[in-house]
Length: 300
Ligand code: HEC
Ligand code: HEC
Image (tube, rainbow, N blue to C red; front, side, top):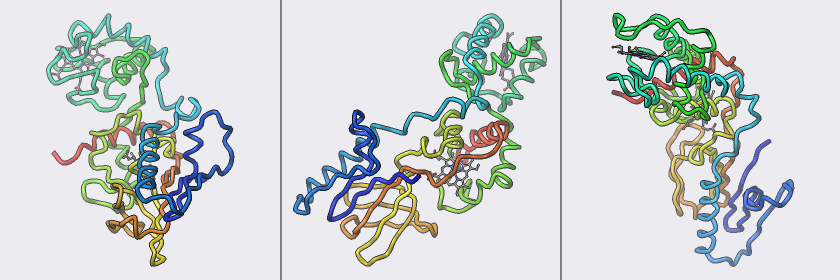
């Protein structure tokens, strides 16, 4: 289902927003707010701004049923078990805060060579650096638990997203996963979807996972798809890059950068439905993709 909220100029109607503003009201199919045509330009601008502010403050809808994510995350029991193992076995060298060893910050996910969960398991079970870190003989639930605790950022009530193999993730991204047909990375690929060259530096694993599993719920205001109709009758669809009171900049469906003056538009719509569809990849493949996306941190 497409959910649009619509700002029509000069006759102004705002759709959908009322649902969010008015929690108590049952969701009617098409709530509409009509304002009179003689409404001053500035009150229109003020309304548009306050609507935009509400959208930003309201943020994305809370995630869908927990089951969507269950296979992709460690359980809270695992995180809990891991916290006990960590305090007993690891904190001595790594400290309670995780930053006790040079160049490693376990709480923040900074490692020397490890990147995937598999790597972490291997490091823990075999030890590293000629025994400076000893090998640990943990039971499977303890091993999973300590990895979960690290992935949860040492937060017992946090979210521990599974992180897979970056090399396998890259293959999925470029080939069978189909991501590269829309996204640009390090100067390669189309511009119609957001450039992901720095995505690993600006999004958490949990945010990346949400985008893949439930793109509409994770949709950021700045990435919302838009549709505009000019006075000359041209319909422009695209991805919003930037917007202020009078203008909007976007990448249109042909990948061209456009700047539109709102006063020249007869229709302007911002969608809350992501263009990207929820992934059908397996939970292991999603973990691999997240592993790859986390390596994208811009050019060094
Ligand atoms: C005796 C001290 C000691 C203990 C105990 C210890 N570590 Fe380490 N750990 C180190 C040192 C030293 C390094 C850095 C090794 C190097 O130079 O690459 C390290 C590195 C790591 C790394 C990063 C490896 C990489 O190459 O990216 C991880 C992850 C890690 N430890 C996890 C753990 C966990 C989990 C535990 C508890 C089960 C633990 N460590 C217990 C000393 C220790
Ligand atoms: C049909 C084109 C298309 C495909 C295929 C696609 N995406 Fe997207 N993606 C988009 C668009 C457009 C957005 C912006 C939000 C929206 O409308 O969905 C987006 C958003 C994202 C974001 C969020 C960016 C941010 O700023 O947080 C990530 C991460 C992402 N995609 C990763 C992927 C991965 C990984 C794949 C492959 C499994 C993929 N996408 C496949 C079009 C696509």
